[in-house]
Amino acid sequence: MNVSDPKPRRLHIVTHGCQMNVYDSARMADVLRPLGYATVDTPEGADMVIMNTCHIRERAADKVFSALGRLRDLKEAGGGGMMIAVTGCVAQAEGEVILKRAPYVDLVVGPQAYHRLPELIAQAHRTRGSVIDTDFPAEQKFDFLPDAAAPQGVIANLTIQEGCDKFCSFCVVPYTRGAEASRPAGSVIAEARRMVALGAREIVLLGQNVNAYHGEGPDGRHWGLARLLEALAEIPGVRRLRYTTSHPADMSDELIAAHGENPALMPFLHLPVQSGSDRMLAAMNRRHKADDFRRIVGRLRDLRPDMAFTSDFIVGHPGETEADFAATMALVRETGFALAYSFKYSPRPGTPAAALPQLDEAVKDARLYELQAELRRQQDAFNAATVGLTTPVLFTGAGRYPGQVAGRSLYAQPVVVESDTDLTGEVRTVTITHANPNSLLGSLQKEKIAA
Ligand code: SAM
Ligand code: SF4
Figure 1 (cartoon, rainbow, N blue to C red):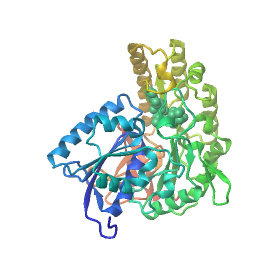
Figure 2 (cartoon, rainbow, N blue to C red):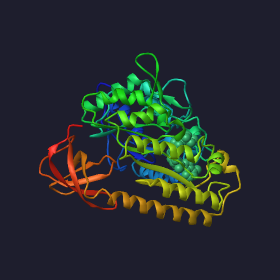
Figure 3 (cartoon, helix red, strand yellow):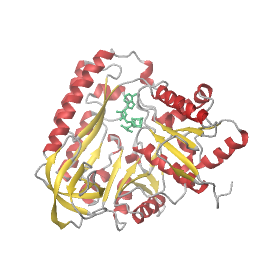
Figure 4 (cartoon, rainbow, N blue to C red):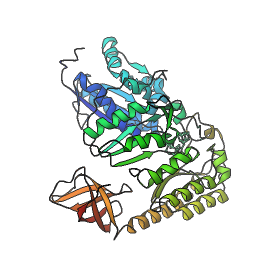
């Protein structure tokens, strides 16, 4: 393939699931750009469509197959030239099944093999057959992804860690994303510098278990997340840092202390607890107790009284009793969350909890309803409490209507203000005047904020 003068090609990427998949999709576009692929918004007329899938949600594989059916129709209508690739966790978990049930799929590529996309595409063209790559190679895909990345805007995601060794009873991640692995700190810092040069002012560090980060530092030692955050905060132009998703068992003393010491670290933490019952946490193999979570929240609030928390909950895990669920509700009421995601337990084939006797669907539904009502109430109360506050906002670009600019609060809430000036990339003081369910309105104050 002639890389210096590539033929223009259209690439459409459909992304399901978490921010890590969003990041991976962007990196796949980066890998394919030198081959002439430019991204387009619709699959119609595309030369290649990538479905980057997620295995966490219920009936994930079924949804992938029905979407693939629609792509097959498009492929046939266009004379068969469109290449279809399935990537992500469903590709990893169901690779052979995909090729059997959807033989018109050209490529099945697991999350560890994205850097090999160009050679896999060439192989599929050469053999006119389907190609599958779902190995967990010893090499790190990060070392092979290109340096030149497309700009992500003022807020940029940066994956620093992949995989997980925790094996929670309900979760497919250790099976689809493989063992926990951290990127060397030097390569993370270099990527962050490039992002800042492209306009990023907030960097969100991503990983399935991000606070287990232990990458090799430029000094040859292992760096934890706190040390990495310290180095990133020193990069000129970096105004804000966040990290997600964390596990309570990996909230080290250093990382907790960093929230009191690192001025770029936002007072906002996503810390999934899943349940408030120690019996359930043990059944889930979570490696922490409800009180460990309480202690972490308490210590962080002592260091930063403005700290706010989000979390994930699962109701209806096998064995969950009314008393267990009541313990979850108690933990929720006591903590007070800015926002939280809650799910009905749904069995994932091959995970330990899937083999246990399951709870009645109606019981799970009722518990989810009760939990979500409380979480919604807390979210509304959190947003309402911001009205009247004067607070820093990082502006990300134009608002939806002319004369508006949009940004993010310390707690990542979308904030919209009236302004005729482009404030993109600036942190400015805003007084919040109104809270909508999913965004805040504010008025711009005169002075600029340095930090
Ligand atoms: N690594 C993170 C952690 O330790 O919590 C999150 C991993 S997962 C991508 C995101 C969330 O999906 C989990 O926190 C959990 O609440 C939910 N989840 C995962 N597997 C599930 C299942 N089988 N049924 C219902 N919810 C599930
Ligand atoms: Fe899944 Fe998170 Fe548990 Fe790892 S720590 S197994 S990613 S829920």
